[in-house]
Structure formats: structure tokens, C-alpha cells
Length: 175
Image 1 (tube, rainbow, N blue to C red):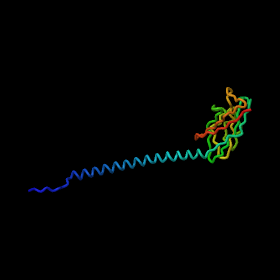
Image 2 (image 1 turned 180 degrees about the horizontal axis):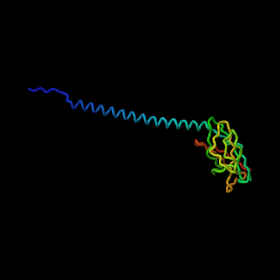
Image 3 (image 1 turned 120 degrees about the vertical axis):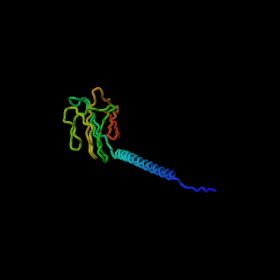
């Protein structure tokens, strides 16, 4: 009578080694890939949190709105407004609108140490974007296009937009 003994063959050992190697390589690849993705998501989350925190810390006040009719040789209607940064970080003003119309020309006034300097005086000059430091003010003299005029006793809406996307609005009634 013959006896059968159970012997492991070389194929079983090699197969097990190959499977363990494949699992180790795949596992290492997945861990490396997930770490890379985690870093990207962590960076995006950090940038978003910083941006939102800065939006909370930036704060502007639009005050001292004055309407000037027949001002200067090059502009008939000018709206003067003081923009004060009462926040804790510098704010960059990128756009000013009057009644949803973007202002592209600014009547030159005074550039001082507390406000960003505009181009040299030349009648109308563009002064944006302007960076306003904390606890500083900036005088803006917006030249209203001749086709647009304000109506007495009807409030005009002045909107200031910052580089971070914040908007600040005030309504003022012209004379």
C-alpha cells in the first residue's frame, strides 16, 4: 500500500510571495497617493479659511458723501466720498459703482501720506485699485459720465468692491 504524504510545492510558496509583494506595492501606492491628495486638500482648506478670515477682518465705511455740480473744466458732475478702513488688515478697493454703473474716471484731488497716491494731476485720472491701510481714509472723487446725472430727492446707491470680493454700499440723496 502506498502512503500519500502532503508536501508543499514550490509553486505555493512563490505564489504567496508574489501576492504579498503585490499587496505591499499596491498598499504603498495608495498610501502615497492619499497623502498627496490630503496635502492638496489641506492647502485648499487653509487658503479658504485664511481668505474667509480676512473677509471678516476687512471693514470699510463710506462716509462724507458730497455731490458737486459743474465741478472743474473736464467734468460736470462729481461725487466725493471718503472711504475709511476700520478693519485690522489693509483693504484693496478695486471698483466703485454709482447706481450699478462702474466708475472709470476719477476727478483728481489730494494724494497724502494717509491715502495712496494717484497719477499726477491731469483733470480726470484713474485712482483704482487703491490700497487703504487700517485706520486710514481715502478720498474718492468719482466723475459721473455726462450721460448719467442724479435726480434730486432720489437716493443714489454707491457700492465699493474690494479685491477679496466684499461689497460695501451706502445710499445718499443728492441736492
